[in-house]
Length: 201
Image 1 (cartoon, one colour):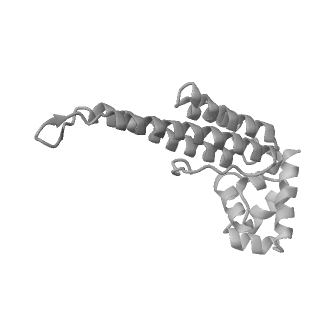
Image 2 (cartoon, rainbow, N blue to C red; image 1 turned 180 degrees about the vertical axis):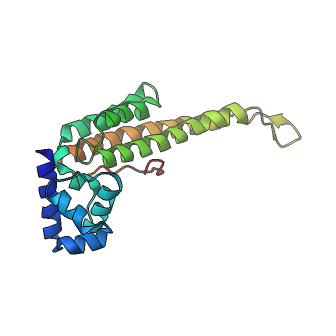
Image 3 (cartoon, rainbow, N blue to C red; image 1 turned 90 degrees about the vertical axis):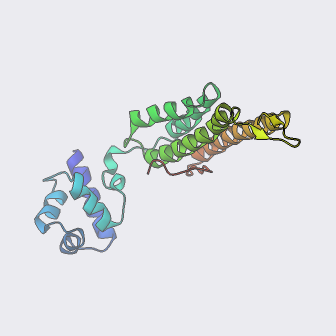
């Protein structure tokens, strides 16, 4: 049954692109026999074959194996909300969404791109979060030369206020983005997180 659904999917994608089996074989670099076997439920494309088909049809691999993918915006929203665990401990904002992603990876539509956006942001956020701690640990032992030839500590009340404001801004940004993106997911829209470094692509 699954093979039949997949073969129909490949055939529908090919005809929508206006390609014959011969042209699809030429574009993908696969043999005509392989294309015919896929469309006749004789074989399930995997690995390199699946990659070549998706590139030739200009779709994602998930779209080709669509019969295994279901839409579940509630799960995506739950995964997104789980990042609020950073309030208990910063790294939990990475670990819990990661576990939820791994549990349902490739089984829910858009879960991969959603999880990557969440995780890339949370990893970036954690790096920003821990930078002041590293500066505090190492910086407090670095003396600075003050006016009049007196050495003073790099830590001052003014510095503490700046650091607290920095942390407050970080926490507020994280909470707001999680809530905004949860609403976007319920409205069937993609998440938008910033700033983020692309650690997971």
